[in-house]
Length: 93
Image 1 (tube, rainbow, N blue to C red):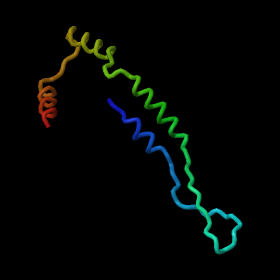
Image 2 (cartoon, helix red, strand yellow; image 1 turned 60 degrees about the horizontal axis):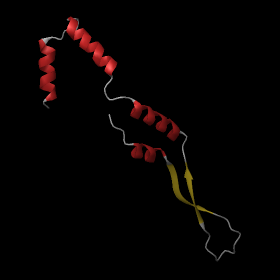
Image 3 (cartoon, helix red, strand yellow; image 1 turned 180 degrees about the vertical axis):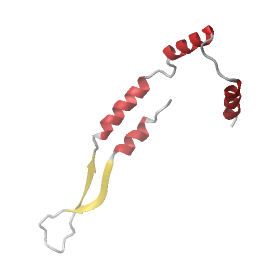
Image 4 (cartoon, one colour; image 1 turned 90 degrees about the horizontal axis):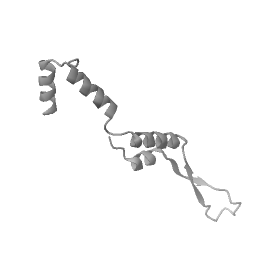
């Protein structure tokens, strides 16, 4: 499983791009300046934490593989022929 860290971080930023009028106390004939405002969300920290956790999780969970292999070897794991055929057909799409 791959996670694109850059797209996750970019989606978490909240940006207010509307111009804001700043009162400068200038005479009425002079153009007033605008202000850009950016707000960073604390949810980004949660996304970073989850991303880090996902990237540190191994792709192959060896403990699960070992348990399944032992079940197959001992004959405890049995799958019907219909389930196998269905999985083969579904994987071809």
